[in-house]
Image (cartoon, rainbow, N blue to C red; front, top):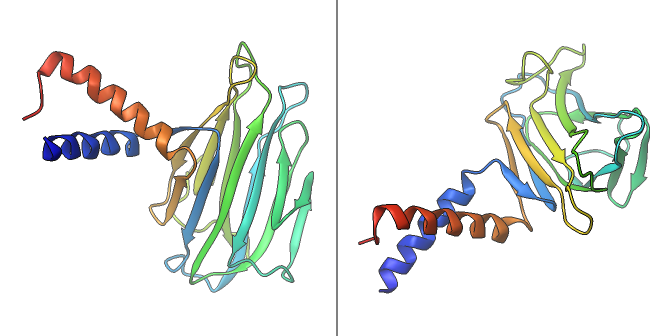
Length: 202
């Protein structure tokens, strides 16, 4: 009985981990820059913005591997505790000088207003450049992004929106942290539905 339960739990966890979607919450992002082939350059972060859309914010915090005394060019970005806050209702960009060769990491947290018709999905994109502003890593050929995290607002008041991950470079990991149990719950529901058609697990 215990083995069967653990097997079901492991399968549910696998189903949850395979999902690119998560509820609102913190996402831990890590970028292994050892394969970039450059000693230094810049990491660029931007939240897509448009006037008159339901407000969404993205907060970058707990930045590890970023020298606060390095060159930083930004606009439309507000300093926050241990990082920066972005809004989707104003043009914004953070261009941060960094040393490559190790792992750069940060936490990313979304929040936002609800929108019954989901008129606008915000995208938080992360790109890397060398000192000559040439893109680095296995980036998306259209956007130049190593990572694109999209925020879809909730359709009802009082509920959270959701995020989806599009990772172009395998050196990038993005792990939803507080949402893990919700993802596991989604996996359990999928497993339960599958059982109705395939019979009980051995």
